[in-house]
Length: 185
Image 1 (tube, rainbow, N blue to C red):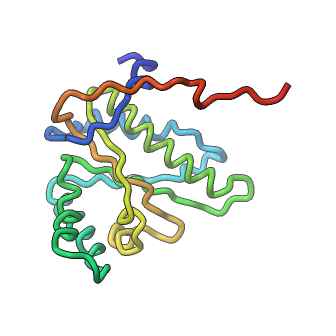
Image 2 (image 1 turned 180 degrees about the vertical axis):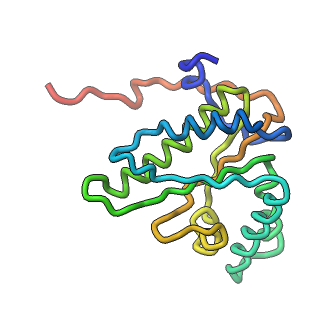
């Protein structure tokens, strides 16, 4: 797929099925992530891959985190338990924020987000489907602890990856004039 075609036409694929990306496809996904803008070359990201039995384990962690809310009913627990099962591969994107005199943590967080976007673009370029999911469980300290995050690390999203279960929708046409203005003289 041509680079501009990928950039202009990528859409989320919320319905995913087997097969998961192959080892060769995953290598491309992560190589693309590593090309994210990175002021100071801090590489403020890391990734966890979750598949197979790990998807059920992640679902249990999400259900346990949900159960910490005394108002959560059985439906909420079941929903959390089934979240990771919506794709054959989940990539947990983790920002590794570090103290640095020239690179504020906000830049590091953005760099990790760019790395995640690189994965989604590379997935699209390879004919794979992907969707970036967050929600309050993404930011729950319980989930971070169970995933083994250390001080300064935070989950910024779960990338669900696999084969699109149906034809992807067409990217909506947006007018750049709605978002771009000239400034200055």
